[in-house]
Image (cartoon, rainbow, N blue to C red; front, side, top):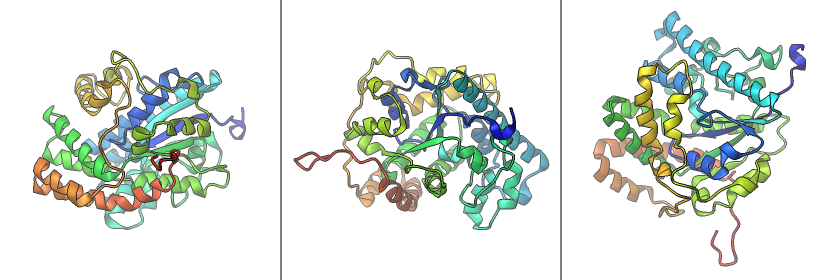
Length: 360
């Protein structure tokens, strides 16, 4: 078959960041039992290992002149391996006449050069060409628009139906720092690693950029759906609206489940990811268990006590008690920096029904 005649894969990409209840959303959607979907053992995370390796080796935010040829080759090679694995799953879904589903954190597929742009404010588009993965199967001419900060071409990104999940930064970012501190206690990283990982994760910049990229495409029939974690937890019927907009089967949606269900964290070592060494799997499993602990201990959607309107200053006072002054300042700055992106994406979200008593 000629390259320009290759059928476009049917696939659905959920864009998230850590601590936005994205795994809860997958649980409610009952992704493993969605009749029209194909996904891997952990519902995505195809690019986890490539991003993890790049961050652990100190490549993120590194100036172009500080990269060796071997650094570039290694990082690009890891991203290409992850892409090739994803494409194998895509082919499997196509063969079964099903939709491939994947959940990925927004920054996992960001071109490493784009991180440097955020630090210096200087254009790094020329350097970014070194990290673009091979997506020639999606057309003879691969383009990269200014708003596309990923390792993929515009043509490749257009082959995905995207959706987004967000959460108020004053809830997500301290939760992230708390989880990273627990992960560090398992020997996964040191104190600098906590701040580095948290700093990379504590941003909705990349989600917003991808959303805006979607809206720039001439063939996008409707804006990509956005779910706010607050609505998911307090008004979970928004998931039914998500199903209507994306073609997912709302008949298998669940709001309660068996606590003895197979745990996602237990499946982390079963992915066969070539970028994660065998002796590292136990450590990754423990980290996954920490990140998923609340969900895996639950029997259904648990309404938290977070109000719809959050006083960031009041929350920051609590962080000073829990984390100390320096960490609290770090978190508070990340929260305020993220608020414009959050408010923007929140304004695009699927809204819950408003009942006659005025409550959503």
